[in-house]
Length: 162
Image (cartoon, rainbow, N blue to C red; front, top):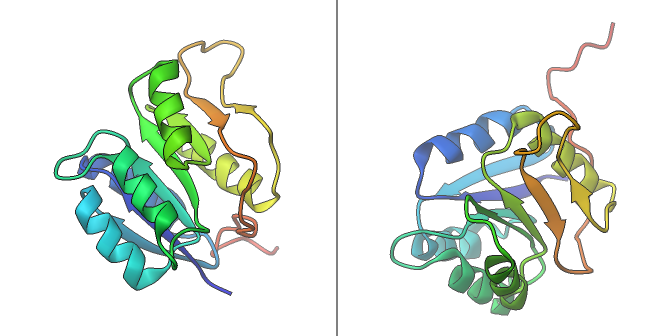
């Protein structure tokens, strides 16, 4: 079964980082959007299981986009991971109120992203920290809501079977 992943960010580099990290993961069909308006259109057409959604975007910000995705018949059940470089309880509270499941701070590593996808597939953490003991500026991942959809495990398509 293929799971749709929608990557929404006005920064092309961030979209490319996420897409490149996940492109060889089995059972993922990747879609991209550069702002909230485009994200809503793509989401309605593709019905993603997982949405990576930037908070600060032109035309329609991530908080309002999240709110509208939650209200949609075909998008309401998606797992929504908010992405932002902004820190603070206010942004997290706004994201949670809009219906986001997780909040991930930028910058984040491709390895942290793969771990997140694996953990979502395993329906794991209540709260996960991507911090390493030696790097206190690593991204934070906070679980905001109690419900996460099943996505399966992130397994590279070109895995050595030797």
